[in-house]
Length: 213
Picture 1 (cartoon, helix red, strand yellow):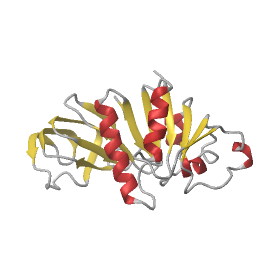
Picture 2 (spheres, rainbow, N blue to C red):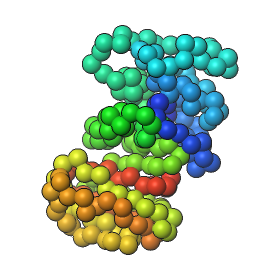
Picture 3 (cartoon, one colour):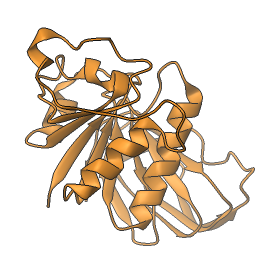
């Protein structure tokens, strides 16, 4: 499996868990995401974007990073371009760092949509920033090794059918929910949880950096 990290411009806390999750991966920076490289002690092999928000020059230690420049007026985001570049280089697993939080809520929303898109294309993808972690859900149960007491939510991007949550303070068993329901906001893990959704688009957002099985 070829693991790539894509550095995006949102919030990033360089925790030991985040460092461990991305250890050994190849790295591509998208526009202002380059600023996360030094705190994480990463050396991107490529820096892509229209560079409308990035520093004019990267830190001296990153001055040799190869750039791929795109026009500002385009139909794809810098993050999307970085993801597609990683896939073209053989990525089968993607970790989007700095995809959540940050100054632009629309960017965070777009990254969640992209995670769903590429997950359904068979890419192993997660979103991490050191404070929160997000994973797309499917009919196949996924186990998340959360610490007891960790808060998590299921974010829905459509109506869902057959949502099952095990190992939580408020478990669910094969529940159907309309898109407008917020029943799945702010649950609490008793420890490891297992989540699946038979139909529909949903993402688990955890206030932790769990191992996944």
